[in-house]
Amino acid sequence: MLDLKLEYDYMKKDIDAAIATCLAHQKWIFGPEVKTLEETIAKYLGTKHCIGASSGTEALVLSLRALAIKLKGKEYFDKQDEIITTPFTFTATGDAILRSGATPVFVDIDPVTYNLDVRKTAAYCAAHGSRVVGMIPVHLYGQACDMDEIAKLSQQYGIFVVEDIAQAFGGSWKNRKLGSLGITGCFSFFPSKNLGGFGDGGMISTNDDGIADLIRMLLKHGGKDKYNVDHIGYNARLDTLQAAVVLAKFKYIDEFNTNRNTVAKQYADQLKDTQGIGIPSIHEHAQHVFHQYTLRIAQGKRDALQKHLKENGIDTMVYYPVPLHKMKVFETSHKSFGDLKEAERAVTEVLSLPIEPLQGTETTAYVADAISSFLSV
Image (tube, rainbow, N blue to C red; front, side, top):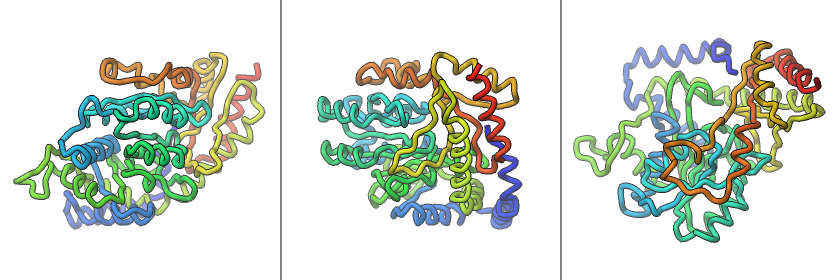
């Protein structure tokens, strides 16, 4: 699915130099690379603050904990406080809501973009708005949610918006970078992401000075003075070494996202006339960065196609095989709005193809041909 060795070879000079600098200065905790990366990404996103964290998951938890402290004057939300999100995402999104003390409310997805269905979200807010404190739209597969409609809901019902941008670094909505549209934006630097490190890492963006101050305290045990803390905190700092690697790779992010779009266009051109599949649809206002290129395979053929591709040396993945509302961890700790039928259908039909910034046209053509030949039988 992703040849990280190929990417490393492409950026080897920059990455090796960044690591060598760290070895020379030996400042492993809050080293200079952390601050430089925070400032660099804040400028790129157009936000006042960016704060490094130990993972994308912790970025979500830190954001929600800071919001609980600011909005409720308490360390955690209460169970009656509801936060809306999608059931079609990685478990970390819903798990972060539980860890903040709130109750996740799963609202169904749009069948075309796979993102949170804003109309159904609006319907839930109209019926239960007094209980809703916030929402976490997930920019799934690299495509932005409809942030105009989400902003309207935020203003109408007085609820916060935390963006989950784990899969969409560099993406935008109407030429505004994702991460600059909510009260916070939460990024992951997991190695497979569009901008990934050599291990776990994450970042939070915000324009709110108070939230930024709270997050900076929470990620280092809960206080400005680690020997006299104010809040229940975490050891959730971004490692200097990971910051150095991500900073070295950052100079390539726009080039690599452009390359991903080129691969996606080749897939679309070759597969557009193939019967029995749905190819990704790009919203007119979204700059898709194609963290994944995900097909919808109709008529129960998804698993057979995946097996066929594997037999032909092509790796694929199902993101995601189980919706959050079906997981044991959420069994008694969530609410669902409606039957969530689109999410439940998507988990049986989606299939993500190999897509990476250095993928050659021959590779892309081989994958597309293998799909077309199987489905034409």
